[in-house]
Length: 247
Image (cartoon, rainbow, N blue to C red; front, top):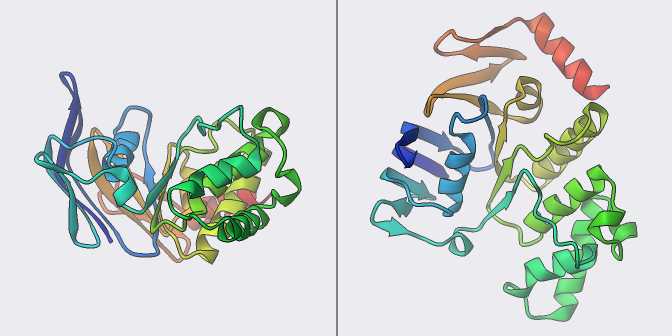
């Protein structure tokens, strides 16, 4: 469904992505794992169409959407993105956030109302439809940002470290809820994180980014197998990580 071929990208003189190759299958949840500054967020921005690659091509469903000479705008890609800072609007209540996301897609007020109720129920915010962002808890804000991203039923969901600002218990709760939602919607998802435990818990596959390049990791029978042998995790450590997330 998503394919990045030999992507180079720089900011000024700093090369951020260096021949990046990446494939994500339809319905798959892929985690991009790596330290700050390794190129994870840049990769998401290129996939979303927020920036144009300096070299290489990006295809979605075999359709060329990005290259040095071509850029299909984000609103024509059926992609939604949840940013690290959430980008909630302080002057809009929960229901208005969802309604605004629907305006350009649906004209019928009845259908908009039905979709709003459905998505708020899915993220357990139906009792907070009149609340403003400053009246919500950290987890509720995260769920609102997720609901706004999902209400138009995009084909692809991009999550850029959405839970990094939460405490451990709340982050674990949000991981469970997000995994439940994307599995229920069979959503093709790319989840960016620097936390290995988050990646293991939520993803079908993990790719380690280092210096703008990908090192692929497969999850098989609760083991993490790194193809370049730079990360090694035993079954015991994996079970411990799952327990920490669950509790």
